[in-house]
Length: 233
Image 1 (cartoon, rainbow, N blue to C red):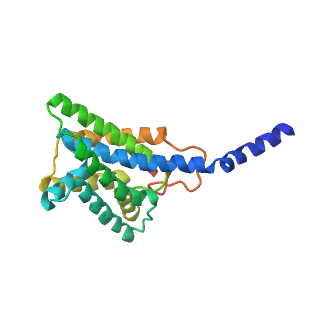
Image 2 (tube, rainbow, N blue to C red):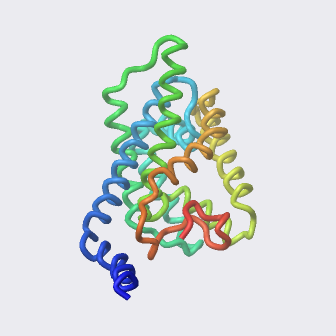
Image 3 (cartoon, rainbow, N blue to C red):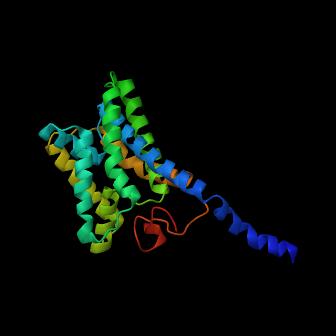
């Protein structure tokens, strides 16, 4: 009887005694991940070997308008967020913070990071940027405060059209890359490597940084079967 009673009260005490620690960890992951995301994007810019697909568009628009890449990233993120309205996507703290933090962090990193000189240094900077982007993605999404505007656009279109996430993501990425390249964005080996490796990297770090213990209210990036969710409930 005493053993059964002890088992019954143990899972109830932990979340009550330390709910603030759980929230603090999630907030640190969210904002730390978003800052690192901006830094990783700046590393890919400085490598000179190609950007992640959305930043090809951001760079092209930056060249066209004369605005900084970070500011363009923020404007595009806010614009994409407006597209959530007809898709009936609901933003969270992570969605809004994504728009505001990544662009500012990217501009700050670009202000202090020099261009990479020489192919070995360029390759090292490019690889660092890609891996750091995977780490950042895992950190911010695993915090469960909601996806960024671009991820929400993907899953909103997936839900509305009934097409697979893979197909929707591919169409979006190709459209963004082609548009950005035509506007003057850098398309290189880094873009290809990013496209091939960011999925496995993000999946690994999503599980690595998963916040344990409180699944209620968790945020998934797609509804439906568990295979369509970035994180299980």
